[in-house]
Length: 358
Ligand SMILES: O=C(O)C(=O)C[C@]1(C(=O)O)C=C[C@@H](O)C=C1
Image (tube, rainbow, N blue to C red; front, side, top):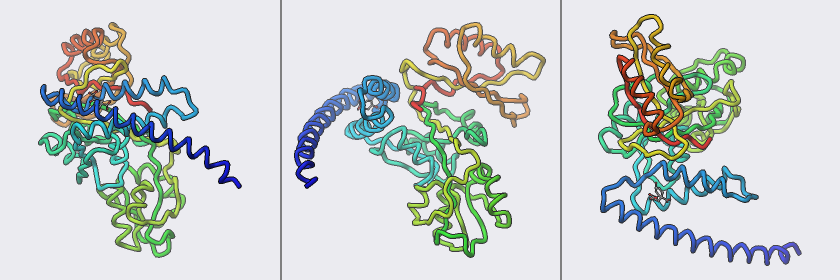
């Protein structure tokens, strides 16, 4: 009975799908032409500022009933596939596959890329600096645990620039091979993850040893090999290694998020809604930090993040990591930076890039 009613509706869907398919391939052929123009001038294939503009535009134009975020997900994949016709970009990230870093890669680049899982954050920087990867994606801060210090240290030294940011919700699950805690003697996860779950673990698993390992993906792999080991990781990592969920959402903060940055040789142009990251240091004397930041206020540039990190060179006391609204090519940002540079003992623009969509 209901099939009789479904049939004409499905015929409509089939006809619309045929039109979508035709349009998608028309779009892809234009992207191929863009690829030829870029190849003639050796221009970069991935243009994050253009992709950000397209994603903002489709969200603004979206009449519904599809929700804007879903429309953006669809268009991100369309652009990813079109981009892959020009060239498939290689993106290094903290592996193994199944980590939140891999999710961040797909959220930024879509799925039509070649992922390069690396054993450490250092390795992601090295692979990108060496040109083995076009881009790297590294975690920079977590909403519960704060800065990822290794990334901050490496950003100071690298010749690469930040060309994008991605923020993703981080929900951790306790998982084992059997899906129960029977016979479990240790719980493995990355040290940041253990810290993000410590209240829950103290309450629920007080007597079980906690072991920090290189990544949550590695913890999941270990749990798959050993029935006495439990892993805390994202459920995608658990699925990859066939683990059973003992308890979902064991992170202490239900709104836990991690922000990642994209690093590479590319320096994106302005997209209209951008952010610039800086690293600075001042001589250790009274009022120095206040004076350092005064030019931002003078030129009306908003600071969205301020982070300090002890300098380990012995030359200065602290490095400051500052994010401001705007692109370094914006006139007021450029003027403020010229003054900041004069007040600083160390001044490095880490990169200007489009604001993340979430
Ligand atoms: O506009 C471009 O430069 C393109 O290459 C096209 C396109 C797209 O599919 O819209 C693909 C890749 C770029 O990163 C940006 C946009």
